[in-house]
Every structure is written in C-alpha cells, then in structure tokens.
Amino acid sequence: MTDHLAYGVKMDTLVVPPDESLAVEMRLDDRPIEIAPITVTAEAPPVTIDRRRGGMVITRDEIDRVRQTSRDAADVLRSLHLPGIIVRFNSTSGRTCVGFSSAQVVMNSPGCVEMLVYINDVRTTDPSLALRMPPDAIERMVVYKPLEAGNLFGVGGGNGVWMIYTRGN
Image 1 (cartoon, rainbow, N blue to C red):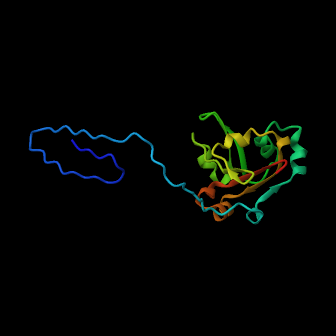
Image 2 (cartoon, rainbow, N blue to C red):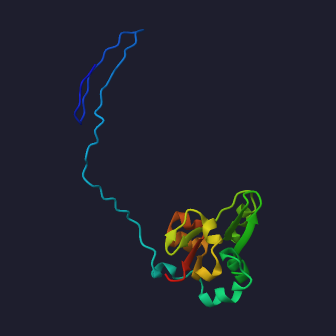
Image 3 (cartoon, rainbow, N blue to C red):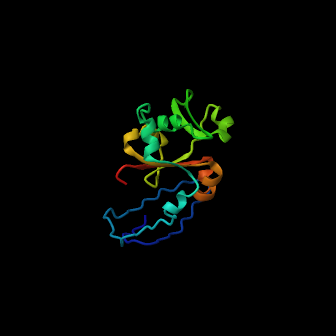
C-alpha cells in the first residue's frame, strides 16, 4: 500500500514474481484543487468583406424577386438558377443537398457532398439549418465556386462555400 495525499508524481517500484498476482490500493485525495485560469485563443483568419470578392453575390433585391415562390433558402437558390449550382433532394439521406455541377457525379451517389455553409461569417455544422431559413430572414448571400472557395477557405472549401447574411447583421 502506498500513501501519497499530495499532488504531483509519486512512483513506487513493485516486483511481481511470475505466476503471482498483486493487489494495489491507492488512496487519492477527493478534494478539488484550484488551478490558475486558462485562456484559449483560436487563431483563424476572420471572414471579412475582402474574402467575399469574386463570389456570386445574391442581393436582397434578387431574393425579393423569388421570395413569393420560395419557402426557404434552398428554394431561393433553386429559383435563381445560378450557373453550376444544383439543389436537389437526396432520397437516400432524406436531406436536401446544395452543391456544384462539377461534383455532379458524387452528388448522384447515395451520399451528398455539400458546400460549406456560413451564417453571418460563422461556419455551421448543420447545413440543413441554413437550407430551412426563411427568405425574409436573409439580407444577402454569397456563393463561391469550388476553385475560388478552396483558395479562400482552405481544404474544406473545395466543394464550394455558401455564405448567408441575415437581416440586421
């Protein structure tokens, strides 16, 4: 048995003869210890207006033109007939997929390679949230083709990027 009720490293050497077992009991202090605060800083380039250069910008006026026939953001993209963009329902996954025609072969498979989606410059982990956003909530959108998205957003942008800016932001 070893008694060690302090914090730090304590090491004892135990020799166990062959074909024998050894029981070890360690007493640990169950009182919490106080540690100094830790500050975590993430280093990532902010998404700024400069990053939006070159994308297909969809203005509020363009959204208003198709608003009456659009239930959500996916319908807005579908109704605008943007070059290269495919909006389709994937019956295997039960989800709507937004991607580019350059990835059409992959998009016709049971899986779906979706664009990265940002809402108000924050990457979403669930693109379906953006797809269901009502048109009245959207101020503007910017869509980047895979090549330019890969250059601006890194490896994750290789399938394209869809940036949505809500009204009031």
